[in-house]
Length: 67
Image (cartoon, rainbow, N blue to C red; front, side, top):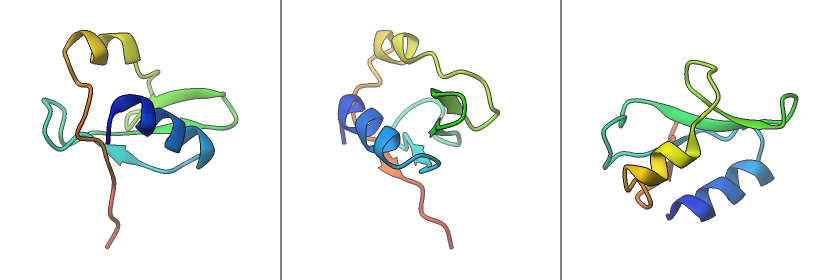
């Protein structure tokens, strides 16, 4: 899924964790926090979406599958 679709999916499903398995931070997930009204990383930091775009992290987003 592309980044714009991933952002929309996260915003429409607050708390949904998404990962970028084909990218540098494949171990990290991102999510939309409804309380803060912002996108956060797994560590609770604000996700710098512009930085992700500048590093060409534009596609390959997937839901984190919990076991």
